[in-house]
Image 1 (cartoon, one colour):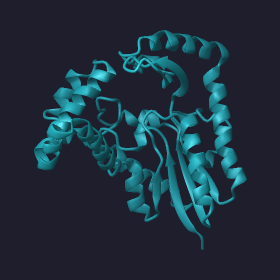
Image 2 (cartoon, rainbow, N blue to C red; image 1 turned 90 degrees about the vertical axis):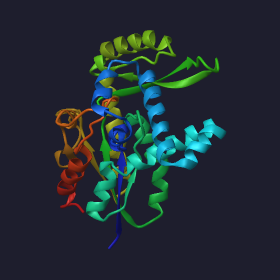
Image 3 (cartoon, rainbow, N blue to C red; image 1 turned 45 degrees about the vertical axis):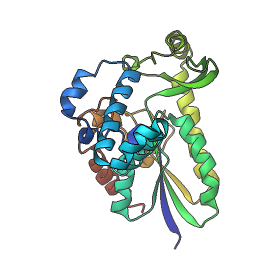
Image 4 (tube, rainbow, N blue to C red; image 1 turned 135 degrees about the horizontal axis):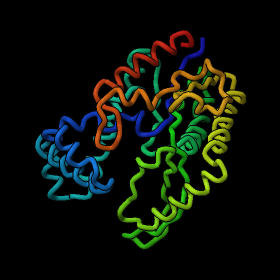
Amino acid sequence: MADKIIIVNGSSHVIGKETLDHLYIPNYDTWRIRNKNELLTKKRKKRNILRMAYLAKVKPRFKKLLVENHSRAVRLAARFFRYVERKQSWPYLLQQRTKIPVINLGMGGAGLKKSIKKFKEFLPKLLKKNIEIYVIWHVEEMVLTYVKVKDSTSNQPREVEMVQQWRTDRYEVDEKISEMNAIRESILARSIKHDYRRRIRKKHLEMVEKFESDHPMLKNFYLLTMPGDDQGILPKQKILMDDHWNRLTYYPCGLFAHAVGNFHKDMAEYLHQKLQKYL
């Protein structure tokens, strides 16, 4: 019998973001409410300061490094928190329940286009082995468009993910890039006029389904934001969840709009039950 592996693609909702914030931020609930309406960059800066203070308190060697080589300390801290947060995520917990290796390819801010690109680069490594590949695609509500803007720090062009939100009121503009607001308005206007979101979502889902038709050992499954978000092209048995956005509202929300509390634990249990007949 062939071995099995589970691949998870998605955004920050699959990598455990904010799951441990309550441990190193004093009076977390009060702090979260007080800073809710701050700009994204300010919120990140405040949280990073608290993260540094926490590590300096519990790890004396890190405190010394913070003084001697601040930039290296910042990089190590970011890497540390990425690592420990992923161990709180539902893909990691799903691996513990199924006893099947789970590779989490999730990336912060990734839309379906970016997830497809990363998966396509990773797939050849798996195809060299005789294994059954189960791929879970977390299909975000957003469509990400890449635009070139001038970096305010280096004065050089850089690629930035412009978020086209279906719920545009959740969008925040990076305070360092003033041009993004005008670009966003233009993109949103064109998107509505030409039905861009629906057409590009259909195109991307067709690309994902082609992976399965091209590779018999691969099987796709989907987590959708809401019913009907599959554009009517996905078999119903492949849709493990079609109300992801609604389920997020059942749980406490972190400062950066990620579900916390028991969200990842409950998701792992739910998906384990849904996948049992396939695994």
